[in-house]
Length: 321
Image (cartoon, rainbow, N blue to C red):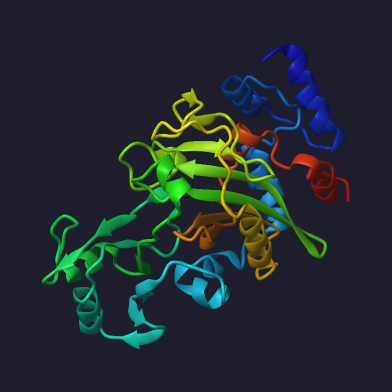
């Protein structure tokens, strides 16, 4: 990146009274995309200054527990859960059950299931898939009780979502989700950026940091022409080899409307990243949301500066008020 562009970035932030310590973020995004923008938002400024201004850290731990999603977001489509473990206690149908009852319920499940931590499970950590036969899972051949012991407490077991045709074709082994960044402004929620995340070849998860690919989504719902991997690889195809340009996300307006409605339920957080899937009928399904570890790189690599047309409003509200 040229010295001239470094000066432009420094001047841009100086306007808002922000002293840019370095231009590493600008250099990083420019080196990947080949495009320089003075208003790229550095990760350190986003997490140390912007999020504390907009998101209530006191409310964060409890409200992000996946075991509370069905109560917090009532009447929104979500993957069906089989068992919850909340602080060591087992629940089914939101009723307290015993360990033996939990084991019995899983023994009666014929289909493959997914288990994951219900708190702080970002980056695909400890997400596993398993089937049960005679009290034994096919995950490392663990007995059901041993699987529970592995996760200790605070986890959820769900049915696996059968995703829509086009997203499955992009990479058939993973649930490929839309990461939607929204901003709660005044009495309205606006969409700042949407990125499609696709799992790598033969991967069960779609995380960018685990070999997955990312592709920007236009406001119209059409995919952009390039996908990016964390190793710097850029292609114009999905992991399965489909050309990305011209692919339309089904029911994209319903996706954005769902996000806006979801966000209105949690006004404690003004900037939120949502993971939304599409089911076999192309209907949006809420998977999870993030308020702190939001992974802004994937947005700025695919869609440019994080705040888009709302940047002046957002930055002024933080630094010039």
